[in-house]
Amino acid sequence: MSKLVLILALVLIIGFGFLVFLNVQAGPEHNLSGYAWSENIGWISFNNTTGGGTTNYGVNIDDTTGVFSGYAWSENIGWISFNEGDLVGCPVAPCQAKLDFVTKQVSGWAKALTDGGGWPGWIRLRDTNYGVSWNDSTQEMEGWAWSDQVIGWMSFNCNNPETGNVCLQSNYKVYASFTLNQPPSAAISCDSSQCSGGSCNANWIAFRATANPIPCIYTIKNNSTDVDSTNCPIPCNDDIVRSEWYLKQQGEPESSYVLKLSCVGVCNYTLQPDVAPGIYDVKLYVKDQAGDSDSTTHSLYMRKEIEAGFMCSLDNSNWRVCESLSGFVSQGGLVYFKDNLPDPNEHTSPTEGAIIDSREWRINGAIFDSDNNSTPSINLTEGSNIIRLTVTDSENRNDYQEHSIVATLPFPEWKEVPPF
Image (cartoon, rainbow, N blue to C red):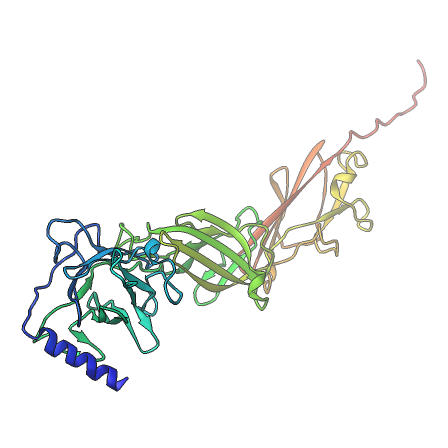
């Protein structure tokens, strides 16, 4: 490689030490401009703003795919093509001229269109010990290409890393005047303002969204941004074209993520009743118009919600679903209630980690017991009776349950009296 560097340096100093070129800009349809230098054929212009008269030509790099297209011009050999169609059948794959946006390296080939000049015209843009690269800081192409016939070494910059800076002798460069797509930056936060007892601090805590009368409305917010957006600085997100929300139980593999919400653009995700109590990983995936993407995750603790439930009895012993007493109890009859039975559907339980500290019993809207009593009773004075139990726990979460009991009129009492 040291021998190669020496040869290239001599080519630069001897071949064009007396020439100086001004910096120029590419036309709107081509994003490469300026000159490359060949030891054998001299200057190669990459845009008609730098050479080639009034003919509209130039070389372009697709800022999404990195693929080259178009033509450069040499007054000694004519057109040099970077079009994929002209590069079919190159000596060694890959043939397509392409810039890798990650490594900033150019690979593939270009081809001089020799029109039967007796040589194939192939120009290799990268091999194991040389190649062309893009410096995204200076917006300049750097390095060397090679053709084993006619063209020889082809330099893209007067300040190549291999040979050092010779720009005082000849200030030439190939400029790449485009900006790479910047990927989106996924970011999330949460809003627990409508979820009493919920938290959006370091530990995210929510409650299953089924409680009443005050449900837990817990929203996970999409704060993602993309600097390529047109609505910056705030919210700076209109380049994001898709958002996807996923959940999985913490500790499960990545393949366990379940899609919960997908939308065009940017959207928030409000937890739904189908999310059972447990510890979860929340994942947000966002994608921009160029197809670049990003994702982020955060843990979420979904706590078991408070639930109210109770059963009824006519003898304080045999407990039944309250509605089943309809028709079996008369107006004025005594009915017992109990909310700490083992039945999972008719049982009061507090929020996970809390205790029940308030029970309020109502019949047809009127309170008949508010002493945190789990086993009250009342005489049904009306035919139609709505019994409601409202419970509150030490986390200030509450819930209620209602049952309906229809009481029948009591049978008339008969008294035998003597006739007149």
